Image (cartoon, rainbow, N blue to C red):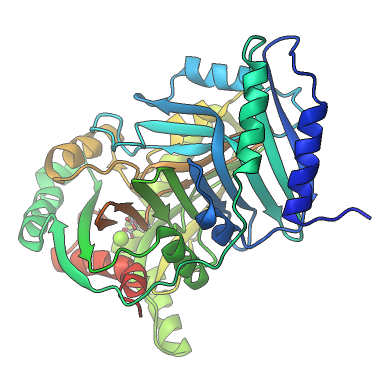
Length: 452
Ligand SMILES: C=C(O[C@H]1C=CC=C(C(=O)O)[C@@H]1O)C(=O)O
Ligand SMILES: [Mg+2]
């Protein structure tokens, strides 16, 4: 009888590697796959010693992935061009590939801002080892990618990666971390000035929306493990995407984001307008009253409407059909609730993921309108580098691709954690209320970091 423990599956993969011919007839990329009973994936990932480490989980109990190492690593100093994407497709994502190879990674919010170290303007990885789970079914996948003359070395490296796997261990506990210092950029007085500028009728006439953000840098007595924080965060917000990228031991970017940039299955596209925010109530009646007030609030409706209109316009030339939910519904998170409109499209034949990324990212839920004017304002005045905050994170695959907008995110480096929160500023925005909205967006993660 086949044993589905990870150890048994790894032994089978080692055996299959041995059986592969040590020479290759040409350049090739392939994936060996074995069914497993999946261990808890975040805990397994945290225990591994190989980098990069990547975690991805779709919304509402969606597909879960933990991946380590790289059979191919594309660290780009510019956002992907048509040529780069063509190459990626030719090499791994060809429609005649039956292996379902995927490139996991992301891209920064603004290619014109300096890139974060490790993350670059864009960074995509074909993982060496991927654990993929969908409901009760899970596999371990081993990727091999090489040329004729380095094939033997590729086999040796794949073997090495399998032998270096660590067993899953419990996640390190959160521990009683104390926040020693906190620095906000911008601080509140500067925030107020910026809101005045954005809401000034002369500016607002041409630039109806700018999503202004704040960076909150914390130093703590004991830096918590980012994977433990992500795990705690996902328990509180299972309806959000949950993901983390650690390209080296130095920096980890995690996000528990409610926002989908897009999901593509074949030519079916699903995206959304997510903008407009209020808090949750303490009782069901209060929660419902807050939701109703949000649905009827003109400032929040305007925030959402601008995103909806823009996405519809951007998709029109790429799609045979675009359908938008006319009235927004409410998406509830642990501490806040948002206005949400689902958007579906049937893509024209031949439309690729690069076209989708360029058309949709960044949406006016994180940038503004018009896109370039809003981004210019952010670049010149916000005062910090957004890096992958509000960027696009996810995966590219042949038949299916999915990206989330990396809001509700945190960057862990040496001795500090940096949190990010933004708010859509439109004509009727009040500086104090928008500042409070930023705080509301941080409540859940701050609670985790405070050990609450
Ligand atoms: C930019 C962020 O949120 C966006 C997504 C949902 C609601 C938003 C809002 O109501 O302002 C923002 O547009 C963030 O959380 O950093
Ligand atoms: Mg808002």
